[in-house]
Image (cartoon, rainbow, N blue to C red; front, side, top):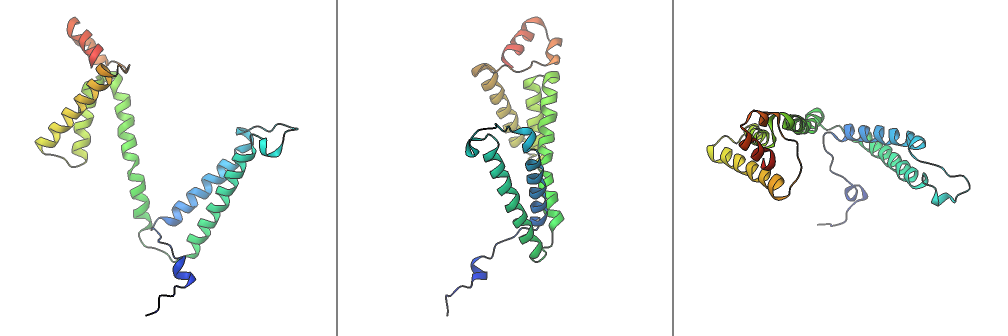
Length: 179
């Protein structure tokens, strides 16, 4: 049995179904960034080339564009892999959690840090498929621990919720200070 490897087998790479989409996105992004370099960096006349504020960003973005073009070329010349759009949809699914975070951050000033954190911890646990009493209790307990750690122990100044304004004076002050 021969153990001699051909160049083709040595340089064969594993490709994902969304490889061509990724290659296009990176090439478009790198070209866009390269086109912005004149507005985003400075050129000082009379200075040495390597000391110019624009030089090294231009080199890195230029090389990024060249390698992105090579990546696209390699992906375009390779055989087509089925499942490209399923792969892209799985990438886009990650944006759901960014949406959850934005909704959480927008809700804290109205609902208060503690109630909002507990509510979103439970909602995300349910969204992730954890429906047992034990797991939901763990979500509630961990969110309470996080709130106490941030507000009471670390003294992080977070916005108080408008909901706290409806509480009686003593309880309102306690909740504003610690939760």
